[in-house]
Image (tube, rainbow, N blue to C red; front, side, top):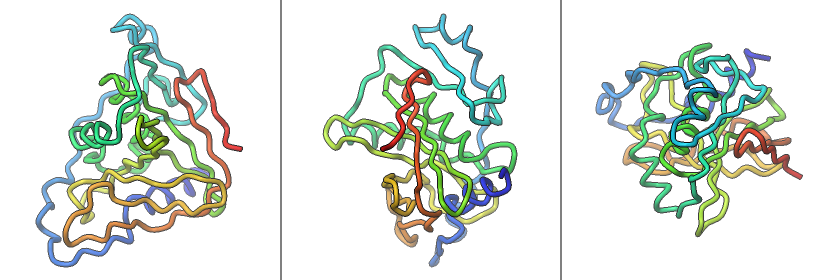
Length: 214
């Protein structure tokens, strides 16, 4: 099961991207920044009113080994433009994918933490795929465009890729999981490889609440 999950994350990481003539332009952007473990619930709850909740999915960076969802009571839904600005400033997509160290679940967890810390309401999402075991991404309920799913998964160190790895994806039962680059770059195909058919998905807004797709 773990092996299948790794395969999905690698597919989302853009193995199918075709470089035209800029393979060296961003070769120095793949080095991953330092990744620190999220604080424990006890330390989070006393900092700015942010609380946390552990859910039963594997995390390679959290103190407990399980995904931890942050809940900032002051976080708000933002516009699509504000979401774009946040994602441009956020560096989660620059982290290199490392098997059993930092994968799709960890990208989604870190982005959720960063958004909540910035006062932006964000969910951690688990997606079941017919062909593989599953994948993780995020959801933002924008004030002007409704629910937007964001896939921030990066690629393994040394693999050519666009400078920006922020992607949007349509998540519906029965549809294909095909991310699209949120900020397309010249010389790169904006549509990423189909990772499989979505059979189900779960949205965790605060850790305490679980929305199961109909």
